[in-house]
Length: 233
Ligand SMILES: Nc1ncnc2c1ncn2[C@@H]1O[C@H](COP(=O)(O)OP(=O)(O)OP(=O)(O)O)[C@@H](O)[C@H]1O
Ligand SMILES: [Mg+2]
Image (tube, rainbow, N blue to C red):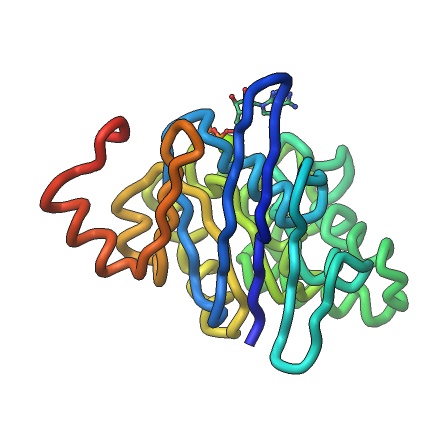
C-alpha cells in the first residue's frame, strides 16, 4: 500500500512561514485537505508532487516493499492534476498524449491508452476538438484524463469541481470514486464541505498560522458538527 510522509516540512514565502508540518498519508484511500484561502494547501500539493522544494524537510513516498525517495520514479508516481488554464492549444487527444510521450511510451500503446482514458472521462466524442474550446466541465474532465493516463499511484487534486455546476461536479466526483476503487491514493483539496463528507477517508484541516490537524473523516465531522471550526465557518 502506498504512503507519503511529508517529513518536517517548512516552507516560507518571503519572510512569512506558510507551512510547518509533519504529515503522513497512509493506507491509500482518499485524503481531503480543508482550510481557508491562503493557508498553504496549493503550496503543499506542489511540494508533494515535487514541483517545488521545501526550505527544510523532505517528501518520502513508500510502498510495501520499497522506500522510494525523491527520485524520478517518485516524481512519475505522484501527479498533480493540471488546472484547466494550463491546457495546451492542441486537440483533446494531443493533450492527453503529451504526458505519455514525455514518458517515452510507444505509439501504439499511447493511442490505446489515450482512447481508454478519454472513454473513462466520457470525452471520446471530443477527442479531435481543440482543448481550449471545451466547456469548463469538459476541460476539468480532460485534466483528470491527462493525470490518469500516466497511471500514477498518487493523484493530487486542487479544487477540481470549484467552477462546475452540480451535474458536472458529480461527473468529476464519479471519476474520483472510480480511481479510489482502483486503489490509488487521492489527496483532494476542496472548499466544498458536502463533497468532503461524501468522499473523505481522512480530513486534514489547515488553519492559519500553520495550525494543522489530521483525523479520520468520521471523527472530524462529528467535531465539526458540534463545534464548527473557528476561523473557517
Ligand atoms: N509564488 C509565490 N510567491 C509568493 N507568495 C506565494 C506564492 N505562492 C503562494 N504564495 C503565498 O502563500 C500563501 C499560501 O498560498 P496557497 O496558494 O498555497 O494557498 P491556498 O491554501 O491554496 O489558498 P486558496 O484556498 O485560495 O487556493 C498565500 O498567502 C500566498 O499569497
Ligand atoms: Mg489553492
